[in-house]
Amino acid sequence: MFSYFFKNFNSFLRIIPLIDKWLIAQLIPPLIFSISAFTVVSLSVGVMFDLIRKIVEFGLPFGLALKILFLKLPGFLVLSFPMSVLLSTLLTYGKLSSNSELLALRSIGIKTSRFIVPALIVSIFMTGITFFFNNSLVPYSNKLAEISIRDGLGKSTIIETGNDVFFPGYGSLIDPKTNKPSKKNTYLTQIFFSRVVQNKIILDTTVPLVPPKVARVQLPEYGSVAKKTQELLGNEVRVVSAFQNVAAIHLNEDEALSGEILVFGNNKDAREIIIGLIEQIGMKGWHAGSIDNSVVAESMTSVLIFMNKFYNMEGAGINIVDSSLNH
Image 1 (cartoon, rainbow, N blue to C red):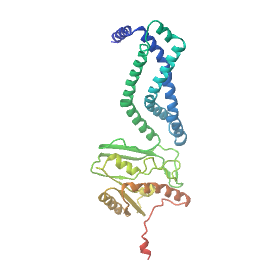
Image 2 (cartoon, rainbow, N blue to C red; image 1 turned 60 degrees about the vertical axis):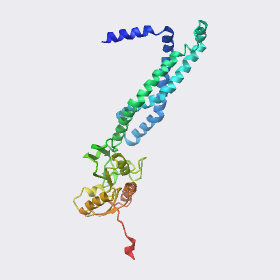
Image 3 (cartoon, helix red, strand yellow; image 1 turned 45 degrees about the vertical axis):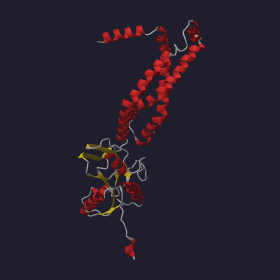
Image 4 (cartoon, rainbow, N blue to C red; image 1 turned 135 degrees about the vertical axis):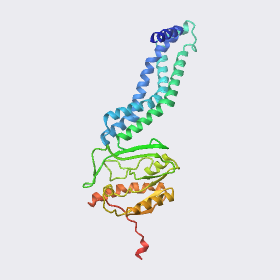
């Protein structure tokens, strides 16, 4: 098989005119150099420094960082291909001109349009590779990189919609005695699985804490986690957000719970069902508006953690007061 391939390949090379083979051979070394240079620079600026920061600040494993760097590589290769073709063409023909080799070609009757054909062939070939990378390889590798970095940093991610939805959430654990997060942030803190989510109610209790500064509000770029969950699962799924301001240590206890809970969601009936469940465990739930408002409760968790630490409390919560009752 290989002998047949090489035989046909050698036959193909013999068809190519000598001048084209010579000019293509002159173009390839600067092309490889240009791709390497542009890729290294763009990776350093776009990914490498950010990964180093995540290794130092958030404890991202070094091996995982290398994997993410490799997965991000195709996206930066696509950016470097056009610039590399241009630079390699300029370098090659500049060198040939300075060595009077182009003048020698013209002196034996070869037209200028003839010896730029190899550069056009290389450009078309690189255009095809760029198209393949951009449409087939880059989206897949970027998706894998995003999943890897979220798993490494202990953040939950949703990558599926419809049936058999599954995603885990990783993070640090809060010591109830000191209200400080553990140094390790790879504990499994939540897990979600549903065979079918359409026309169902999803209760989202996620709080976007970023260790080690969990007492500081640090919302993700997209804002509310519950709102993002609603967008990812679609309008057929009724996402309700609640329980963000109830301490986990109290939820794990068998004793009666105290405090009140803000309930957010775009569907009033879904909110009412969750409020009914809240009342069954001895707490009071409040309609707090659409899922967009959930960002308030998600932010309040960091405030309560700070107050727990500052005032030496355990599991501070919230209560809604009707000021009209005082008159």
